[in-house]
Image (cartoon, rainbow, N blue to C red):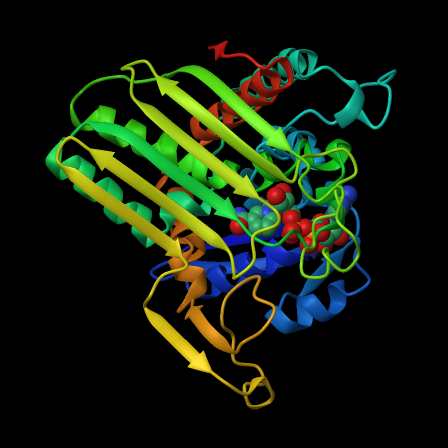
Length: 389
Ligand SMILES: NC(=O)c1ccc[n+]([C@@H]2O[C@H](COP(=O)([O-])OP(=O)(O)OC[C@H]3O[C@@H](n4cnc5c(N)ncnc54)[C@H](O)[C@@H]3O)[C@@H](O)[C@H]2O)c1
């Protein structure tokens, strides 16, 4: 059997999760041949995961005949350029979320999140995204969108139920919130393309769009997003140092809270929440209310293992879940986190796609639609009105 050979760009937070997932692929031989990173710790990363080669210039992967797939795990502002260059070079591409965004044009007043009108951002990001998508489609290679929520077992089960019942989704409530990002790029619009709403909210939004697509396909219909309203805020702006002690959010020109409301072409609804000031561990939830019942996809927290422990000092390396500031008191332990949150299913699907030449569950259409809806949302929030798509 042919081995699928990966070149990984990035050795930060998400690259670690991808590496755990590559190790668990079954039925296909996978080798991560090279890791490219600007981090001084890239050698340690390579040793930890048994990667034989490290580099600092991602462009050296383009003409490397030993690489089949390039896995982009870099900050969002770099995604589009890397995707286009890699696919034009004949590589299949895995791209982390969000697909792309608006990161500034020459002449923009800075910081752009405070100065560039969101209507302008929407127009420009749509034009740029069309070009990126054109290049992707012309390449004939696979674009594999690393939206792990599509592969989270709780979302996969929701989709299975929708396919079986063919029930109509009347509304969905979805959320990703936690106590703030570790990443330095998260604070600046020019690096992240927005704040909590796109950085975290793109997961629940993508799950909603995916499930609505599953529902429509089950009945042979087509349902699209017709209208978007939105609100955003900077809730941590006025906090004292003491009030900020457990919150990691330090936005420069991005929101740390956001809410999207979607109206679909069949007049049904979905709301998506994202926040950077929510303690108690990451909240990754999708509630689906249909004509036939209710499905709660509790990716995290869930009650698979619930603990009440009293002595932090005895717990050492015991992992509880992402974004908790202690291990004591009541805890919702995330068991098999890479699987529960969809990373293993995602990488398995991508490796099968490369081997069998089929399309992924999460591809360019989902990546595109999530960005279109997010930027329509930012525009709606700024102008205080409903945007029709
Ligand atoms: N799916 C998820 O659950 C999830 C979670 C966190 C982050 N992400 C996404 O993953 C991406 C990376 O986020 P992160 O949290 O891992 O960030 P990070 O800051 O931890 O890591 C970023 C990595 O990119 C590397 N890098 C930056 N510029 C580079 C360049 N020009 N050439 C080569 N390497 C370069 C850095 O050296 C670093 O290793 C983002 O798009 C983010 O939105 C996804």
